[in-house]
Image (cartoon, protein in one colour):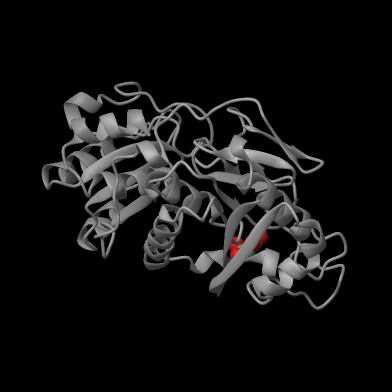
Length: 329
Ligand code: ASP
C-alpha cells in the first residue's frame, strides 16, 4: 500500500453550517481532518494515511508565510522514501493560487493533490467526502506522478497551471475552460487524457528553502479611463512588479502605456495579463513589449501571473529573462 500524508488547512470541506440546506452561509475551517477522514475511513484501504492539521482557515486568509511553510513541509515529506504522495485540503477560493505556487516550488515528481469542497460538511449531499476519497485515490496512483500539482474536485482532475474557479457556488466549478481537464476520477480510478506541457515541480528551477519572504507584486485591474493612481500607489507601496489585468490581449490605453513606462524606468517589472479569462496574451501583440520592456503573461490569469512573477523576481529583474520564464512555466 502507498503511504499518503494529508495536510489540512481548512476551507469549506471542513465547514459547518446552521442548517443542512445551507450551502453558502457557513463557517469555514472548523472540522478537524481526523474527523473528516473518519467519514471515509472504511473506504480507504487503498493507502496508509497519516494527517497533519497545518491550519484551520478560510482560504481567503491564506498567506505567503503559510505557502512557504507548506512548500517546505511537502518538499521534506516527499524526500522521505516512505512517503508516496500528498493530499492538501484547502478552501476553494484561493486553491488555484496555492496549487500553482506549489507546482512551481515542489521539487518532486511524487503526486501532490489539492482538494476541497463547495458544500460544507454539514450539508445534505456534501461533496467533501467523495472529493477527499478521490484525492487520496489520485495521490496513491502511479498515474498521477510526474504530472505536476493537481486539483481534484467533482470527479475531475485539473492541472494547477490552467485550472480556475468558474462558479461562485456550484460544485461543478473547477475548470480549465478552454484547455480542458486532464482527466476524471470514476469508481475509484483515475483516467488521464492529456499532460501538462509546461515545466513544473521536479523540473522547476525555483527553490524556496532559503526564502523568508516573497517579492512584492500587485495586480492592477484594467478599466476605461484609468488615470493610473493605483499603479503609482502600488509602486509607492514597494511593489517590485505589477501584473496588469489588461483589456483584451493585455491591452492598455495610451495614458496607461505612459504610466507603465514611467514605472518601468524605475525598475518595476510590468507583466501584461488579461481580464478576459481565456486566451493568450501575445508578446508584442496589443502592445509593443520590446519597446516598453513589458512582459506578456501568456495564458496565465492575473493571479497566477503574480505568483510566477514573484518567483521570477527571486532570480532576475530583466524583462527578457522574465519573458522566457513566462514561456516556460
Ligand atoms: N470560503 C471558502 C474557502 O475558500 C470557500 C470554499 O472552501 O469552498 O475557504
